[in-house]
Amino acid sequence: MPHSHPKSATSKQAGWKRPFLTKLPSPVALCIGFLAGALGVTSFSPFNFWPSYFITIVVFCWLVLTSDNAKSAAWRGTAVGLGFFGCGVSWVFVSIDTYGHVGNTISALITFGFVFILTLFWTLSSWVTWRLVKIFTRIPPGLIFATSLLAFEYARSTFFTGFPWLLPGYSIQTSWLYELLPIGGIWLTSAIVVLTSSIVTSCTLSRHNHAVMIAIVLLAWLGAAYLQYFPEQWVKQTGQFKATLVQGNVKQSEKWQATTARSSLEYYESATVQHLDSDLVVWPETAITYLYQQIRPHLSQLNKLLIETNTTLVTGVPSFDKEKNTYYNAMWALGDGKGLYYKRHLVPFGEYIPFSSIIGPVLDIFGMPMSTFSPGGAHQGLIHVGKWKAAPFICYEIVYTDQVRDLAAKSDFLINISNDGWFGASIGPWQHLQIAQFRAKETGRYLVRATNTGLTVVVNENGKITDEAPQFKRTTMTTTVKTFSGSTPYVKWGEWPVVLLMILCLVLSYGINRGSKPSDKR
Image 1: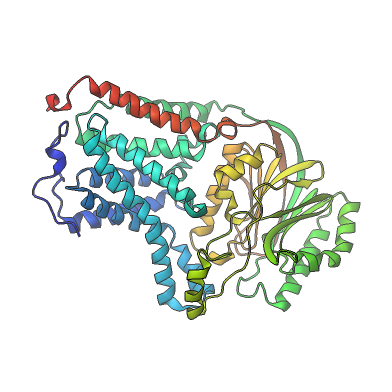
Image 2 (image 1 turned 45 degrees about the horizontal axis):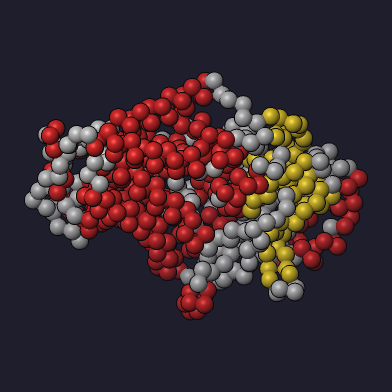
């Protein structure tokens, strides 16, 4: 652990003020960091108190920039990360402990390991920030912190397929910044959140000229406020149809049992027959627990009824490729629709085991069950619903912006089927729903989301929930879904505008600070 230092290195560096709280003893700094990290979780669903995350980043930036050395900065960043991810993804423990059958201790260790891996990105960001601040003395330290954190958050979102959960931009759903999503997506809102927070710390700690950072942040907030009251119509409505979502509420512990599988299928079939006046009926992820190849003949009579009434049924179903000896988690359309989509992004430890040749034997020792699904191909077609085209996403595939952008541009609306029953009454399903709402807002498309235990919803093109079924209740929900054409700026351009914005901010900030010596301002 780093030791408390007699005098912060920041107070010696050119352009730095001598603010209070730069001589915090290490244990105190680490405790503050952990608590600040935990506080940030309350900005996300289901709490949605957006200022909390800003406070977290202000404290995070302060602790890193006032560290005596890079090692101390890394430890402080680790403390913040452990508090944030430890509370933010605590729902992982619920799944492993309830369905992994390995006991509380092993479940806690696996959860801590997962949290620690996520925290490492903040640890490295803190270490890199402290090093770069010492090298690039003409750039405001808060801007270096913001750039480093965003870069490592992007790495966290892509490394080993990535885990783009609890990104900074998701904290602002109830603020004006939510209106920026169609322009720059989650990475634009993330950049503005981090820049806004780091400015507070940087202006307090350093004598650099922060005019560029302040101008960009003010422009973003004012632009978002304008869009809040004078919204821009990026897409055009092309039609609408009637949809029924079926929520089976099957207990995860019983879902794959033979007797439950039969009764569940009977319920889903019965609910569908009662809603043949709908254009679309959606069942959740793996609502059918029989293989696609086995169940297809059994549903021939239902398929005939669907065709006669011009109704499309979309359901989740496992599929088996005999030639490849491979199982897939699939989405299947029948009746008046067509398409078979294989899930591309599988859930680590839920649907596949990373480095299975190494980790698999270890999990076998503890008796933890392992899934055998394989990922589908990168280039798959859309799901056809009558004359409409739907972009398909299974479970947490909806969190991957590149995949959603690519398919949304070709579709009339989005379909997301999921089974959040793995996570019980934890905050996990709420965070998942929040992310799904962001995808609808970014793409300007309605989102039809059917789940096993909830949260089953329909989200409009503005990211607002129009209809919602009660959680943990067997029910159906019938609603109207609107279709849209056209692309938002974010769908067209992706993250490039955000990258260029950060580069421009760095270059201009360096330029205006180059003409004067910060040390002369002391």
